[in-house]
Length: 500
Ligand code: AHR
Image 1: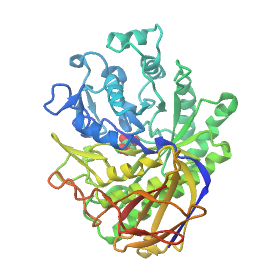
Image 2: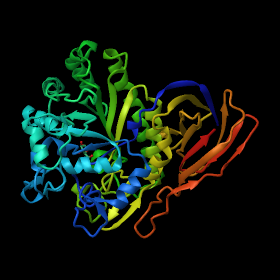
Image 3: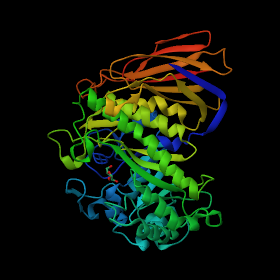
Image 4: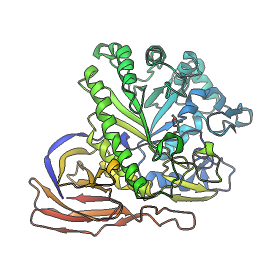
């Protein structure tokens, strides 16, 4: 097959936030995964695990969404500030019914993002909270002058206000966030967002409206139908993003299916379901275009990834799952889709960063491993902030069983400010390598500066005993041709080439 790259045609900037992460108070995502407390034997800085933070810095996390998820609509932020010994304990009803001691709260979140060097995405509580509570949280976090909330923040040890880059007004308000109808939620959005005040005009908070579940196009139509007038240019600033949630459940929502045991049919089913993201982004995007042809409102896919049956022997409410080469492919396919839709998709947060669903990192006590998904995020970090380049594949074959046919290869190509082209290719075939002839419209004289691949037998995964079964390896399977390059992509692989 052929990959034609027209490096002269740039199609828009790939927002770094497409490579965002999500961490919820769920299972061992925050507690143990990120935060162990200052008195832990696990090496930490102000309570944050040093090994995990170091590893995350290598993938250049651009933004972190917190505290949920479903948890966000039950979270009362005041329970998570002040002396830890007096913080209120609560039941985490959504996730395993365990006691949440609130030892990780607002101050700890901002300490974590300081260490990661990333932007902040706070998700507010609409489902069980009040306008006053939300408005005071924003004041607590971002107001630098004299006010009751800024004084409280100072009393709790933080003199200066923090920066909130994004604020989500509720989460999944069609479901765990209050089981609302779109018209009702949209009215609440209009009301709640009014009180998400921007105290620092140099750092305006971008407001994210709660969007649809999967293919609920009616939600997108009705929410925008109710809100958009208020977001038209004269009112611009009331809605900067509209979210979308979509998870890949190989065997459907009820069964899901195990993380490491699946046959070829389920492999292709999973690939096909990952590719479905393209249809969702396209169709929701078309509805957004009817209201917002200038694309001022970003699509924010702030929950995505593979969701399987929890590992046997673990609390099913903790959503802990292994991560195989199949997950590397879900990541490669999905990130290629987001890059290609960078005119509309402005942020995406994979669910979830540590120990939950399609994680970057798994921990066990003081041990940690990087997952195949982590390695794909490391490969793709070069796309952050680069310009999408016009590219298309010709002669792509179709593979897989009848019901779950998929293209052999998907791609995305970008060029950075130094003129270096990043090509990322996902080979969806479980068994066969694929030859790809890569050519440029003009570039003839070039060199491959770096090339890596994440691959393995389709079930391969990393364990605490064998942490490097699947890793990012040097890729040598290419050679120069008269027209460009011929690359041989291993079966079930994600490949990255940096070309100057
Ligand atoms: O990521 C796990 C859960 O999935 C989130 O809490 C919720 O928003 C979604 O249903």
